[in-house]
Length: 390
Image 1 (tube, one colour):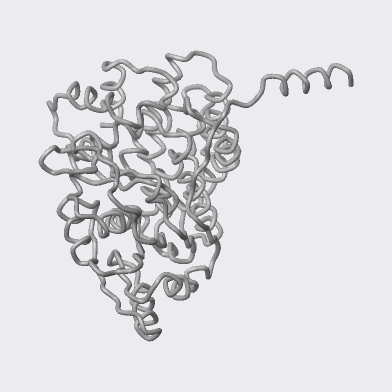
Image 2: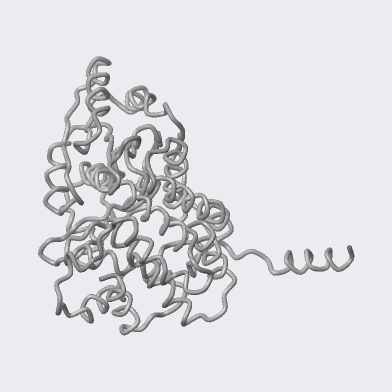
């Protein structure tokens, strides 16, 4: 008993480093919460801009209900990841709006966050973009924004940035400001029911990566750790079940893991998987979730080689091995074969043979996500991670 108490005292004496934690103004999670959208929108005003994807019929019902409640509704449909031109068009369409709703996958929600940020501003989006833009702070507070995800992957409903494709630079970069956090996130797993298998697994792999990378991040904190420790095994189990077929309980779990990932990454950062994914997606147009899934094993292996023995990496390896029935030795490498078994494509469909991967790796090394990677990876190591995903 005395020895145990001494250990507890020693842990307490180590102290906790200062950290912050920011998220959406309010989060509502659970089946049926999407029904709260009309009353929530009305609390901000009656001139409503809806940014939406095209695959979820419920948005038609939402638009009709808003109109019946006396709202002036403008709809903008989005397909694929938003470009600079998409942001400009959405902001122009939304002039005069009082509230913005983003209903769709992470790309739609990012477009909604960007539109809400720029509608009150006289500046072009390029004035505010990181890396390829001027990186200036927003001129004015964004419009109130309500995020309603229809996929379980990005966690964009609780993050403060919008990822924008800059075609002329062949890059994906962020529009970022603390004020871009949604006022309300309505996370209703029922909206993800019946999503196509490829979308489910791709977005689910992104969600899994986004609880693993913040857990291993150099910027991890006690709150992000608590979220990630619970979510990593939960995400693995849910993905395994959804790979086998439709499962409402697994849909619920995956939506929660996605939410947890958004909360964690917004406060603890990501790592080399996302550092590479942003560049690869911008250069070659491969789906983001698939890129992340294919890079997860190679990046974990590369980080582990540099760091050596690590408690956190051992925990992640154990969760992956036990949850996915992978070998205890070579677990990270075995992930590629698992994705092959699931029928998911490798990145050689998008990255042509003979591509100069050194340039891709060099650009990725300078990305904002790479700053939180638990160790520095050489350009050769980053190139090898890409090759392992081909």
